[in-house]
Length: 332
Image (tube, rainbow, N blue to C red; front, side, top):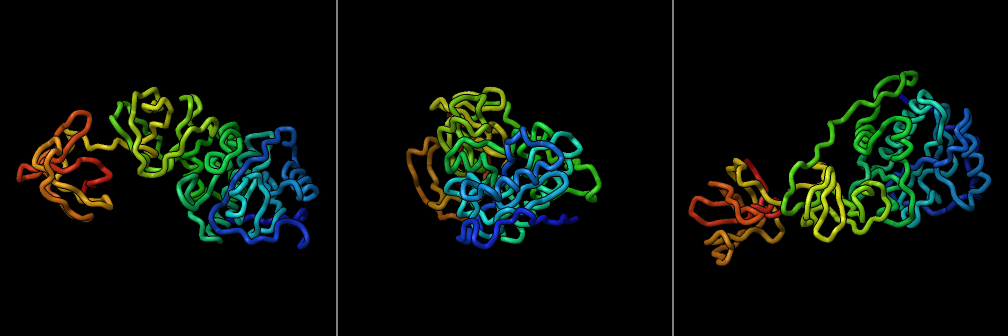
């Protein structure tokens, strides 16, 4: 499947930013303009951008009939992404439309274009994660500032498309011909914690919010936790964890995990994965360390023992090592 790119509103060689963009991000938006959702919505937006390029413009605008190019791909565009603009060789706007059928067609072109340029520039087909990849304007807000949270609200309005669905479609693409109504295949259903761990760690970059209701909105972000960052939990509230500092993070297991292996876990062997290796102790309280082993060391486990709110691994010789998942990782 492929679509033509209309260059009717493309900037001339003397227009636009002349800097070559670093190949870090594909930044994706929606126009946010519900006053322009008629039959030529993308064309209207492209025409406006071409006429006002000194204020703002992106590389592409998509609707159900056209993909219009404005900025030159590979060069910096002023897409409202602040300091992230120089790191994006392609930014795309999804124009608003007035029917489900038109949205379906627009969405197919949107996903196709994102995947096309991510592949061209060697950018991973991952959404809103750490490092390089495809980034929403909401991710830009969370990491560079601003107040935009698109395109999630618009995608949910017409397509019922969640963040996990968008991530799935970007990674795997959409099946069907150009004339087939876009019905994105469903990824696995999000799984949330239904109990309260003592501590959790971030599997991906996680934002902490002032209120539970704001989690995932991009508004009122108080802190960004990078992958492997540890958080102490106060309680579980629905699909959100309230941390001991009073902020809230998601309880989605794709994003966070409990820090310690559970005492009832049947684990036979682990490997030291912490950069500093793993210590071995005479006692479960870790008062007396009798040896230290480098990263990559394997340990045979007799049992996972409870210790307060945490846990320890019991070895065959009666010694103990950490049952922290960031220190010793399960092998079998």
